[in-house]
Image (tube, rainbow, N blue to C red; front, side):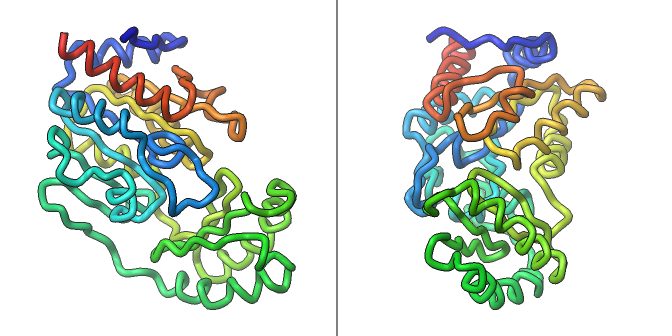
Length: 277
């Protein structure tokens, strides 16, 4: 399988570093829209089977593989069907933007206590949505440590998202939370962690010399920022966009653009082919 090539000098350097010294390289991936296709019902999302197979071939050559997601870590593990897969014994999943951690060795999730603000938002959110006439046309995903309001099912998802930005922002601030925007979703979650911080901390644990990060949504911009910052400290980086028509900001920033989760799966398989050769 032909290996896709980055279009930027920094991306080419990052790919070369990964291939030259994979034992000091980390492959980091978002879940929804990157490993798993976007679906109308988030509870129906499942990782692309070809991507998981490719990861199981690729991972033994690397320092580590990590999934960095806004989902709870246990949910990502279940929907990814990662547990017990041969070759993924060193996989780590950082859930809730890095607030939670699961690793394949222990099979356990480490998570902080849920802030009180999340419980207060959980109690107030239904009334707020009802007052805006959006209780029936939106769907609230309870992530335990965060709450996400999806507008994909609304008659006009974009208009609904815009109408919700201010009231949900005010609700979050009132209870010490922040709002993370995404594809037809606004997530109210604790402050203090994002995918960039999670990725930077994980790479430091492994003394990584190279990193590939692939994502698809606005929440992944923080990880792209982290990769660019790390390049300044000597860590070679490659940013990959799992492209969609819904979010274009990442494609404009990425070193390499691939066509959605199938393209990510093909990239992972091509990397495995190259390292197995």
